[in-house]
Image 1 (spheres, rainbow, N blue to C red):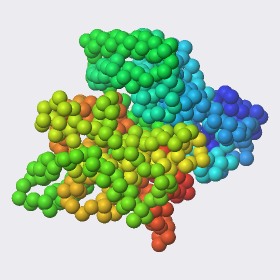
Image 2: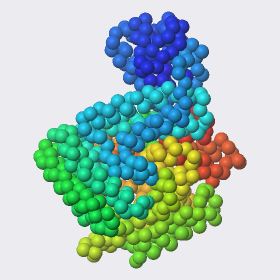
Image 3: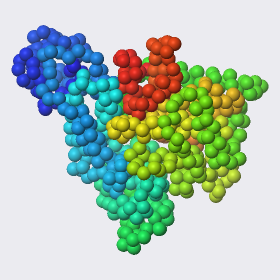
Image 4: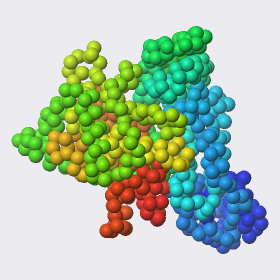
Length: 634
């Protein structure tokens, strides 16, 4: 094990040639003695080129530089599990911690800090809780993050098998996401949406996982605590916030207030206990009022709104490296993304010429987009069943259970998306259905708007592939059967969305349809994800404004004005929405590299099954486990 695998922490003790030293003491000796890899207290194999500051003048600035380099090395090593290093005989951890006890404790603390996540997973001991966002609570979270990273850093990688190494990587990444949110994004101070997610009551009314009175009691607890929670949010937010953050937060706050005031109250009308019913009524009225007040506060902050949303190049690459386990040069990543955009545009041009060579590609895309299903629910139901049958016939991936998704019309409070998955959590103790929601357009809208809301026929097929078979729903079936608590609990953006997006093109290549108009649907969705990725980089590292991103969605992804504007705005506060294309490209590279390595023994279903066996862990860790080497993710 090298310094690159260890945190610089006073609580870590090592046996060195100079006796028992903490990591900090070794660094101090290193700095003070102007290390040349031989004379320092640290062993020579630790002081390898690139991991020390040989020939520097030994001042505190060098120590800070060294600390930064080592910390970055730790994070990378933890995420991609560089476990093949030879342990120096002169550097031995003083304490070996039991892996399961460490991960269980860290995971418990993670879910305690994010109770809404626990509820969505089906761990209902977290029902009715809100996170502590008081000043003391935020500081406690920061301390917890540091403590958890230190505990995970003390795990001896050499004693873990491949699966446990992936588990460790997944949990480290989850903690690092929290640290990035708090320390780099500074979300509690700069993002009003940070406070709204934990207030969402959808999980309590969308599925009957427990009797109504039990779920209503949890709703009452959150409603009663919401006013104080929102007071902390208002006090914490800085006076100058990015205007796109405020606009989106304001939209969400107003929508949530209406949801609490109408949908939630309607959903719990059947509560049997009169006292509980009265608590819910009083609490929900107060919660809606508090959300109204939060919206007013955000509206006032718009007077001082800024355009300061960009992460910058260093923070952007840090985000990819630490939270996703992807260490890639940003220029190389941009080139890869531009190449994939060009590939999909070329395929779109060729497909459009098959349909009508006499008009432009844009005209063909527009014409194909006008073909909407007469009955979206019936069409989605048929598509879902047919995709499952196709997977079984082609043996593309194992379906681990007989569970099928229920294709249903979404309830009114969930009609913010035309088609999406509402999956049961992997920790639910009783069998619960998962729903593929199809949302009808609002009948009060103009007829043209109602028609545009329904996805085109080709798009709906590949949305179904993405959401259900073999995308998120099938991924969830594999997770639900997994023995690992860590892998069932953690979520990595790039793996989860990368798999679902990869599935779209994989299914087309496997022959799911041969109609070029259907292919237009697959390519349209791919182009949106291409532009998201390039917009994220442009907005956060290249000085793009929202208008430039909007224009790119209009021109390169063939989006209408409303969708183009929404997609561009999302990029300012969700820079990781490049995960779809980045994840897809990483999976394609893994597939191609495994095919080259295994030759005639390569089997596509085995690849997909093995990939899904690692849950939604970082793709770098999965790649290392499957290939057995440290080759680049991209």
